[in-house]
Image (cartoon, rainbow, N blue to C red; front, side):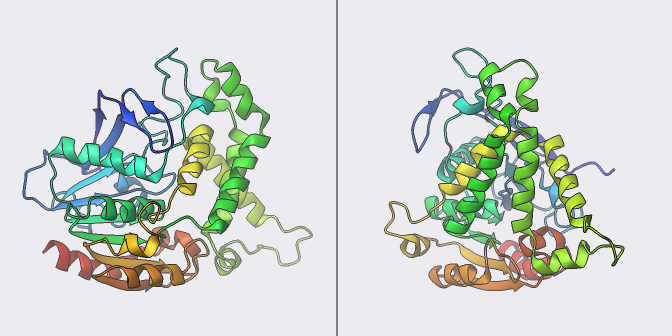
Length: 354
């Protein structure tokens, strides 16, 4: 396996971090990855915001786009990605110890918003000494952060790509999020672990609920045609169809093996907080505040973020190009259709980064 061209760092802020909803953290711990060198002022910065269950090493979950000789080459650009708050991959999350008793927060963790996540990214930007982000890229929920950030620090973001995303959470997504939370809550170990907080028990809590929640989400990430293409029964005369069922159980276990139920629970609430127009006079007015040269990309079969959302976003940003990625694989097309996505992104990267 090739060595990643990115390396991990940890920022401990050492100061209080006020949350948008209520409460605060006395200190934040933020894990982030960068190119394997110190930042040199003036070099081109590409900042990636990861998706819901991704981590801060984009070469891990986007290996066709991030790496040596690829579109996002960490040797050519200074690449940065921060692990979002609430994620179990190193940043402050429900498994972090509470200052009061050193036990994990679990269900005592405060609700985090997308704006809180962006503000934590800004702390990393300032710690690195980065004054300008030449290209900000956010796929899926990372696009939530990218849109919010392009408004919050408009003068800092030179160019931006908003991929398979939206300017606010939709009722459809909130409904899906609630179904996933209900799946977690239906697993009796989810609250048992939060009550008992035994050593080693937090990871075990909610595993069955997390597996179920993952399959609810997965169905929304794909499409009718995609499932019918990849999960058709091998035996056309089988008595009970089970290939798609087996696939869902496999995918549920995969997430349980690498993620955490409590992080997932609070991340879904963060999704429900997303609204770039809140306190800014509405979505359209907020989007009009984006000064970055922008590219909006939506996926033709995406039921979470259908193309009509992307077209509306693009029409509201002053300097913006809109493109569609054709795919049968729904929202996950941004992970599957790497060749076609690269063809859309490459001209924008070239004109943005020279």
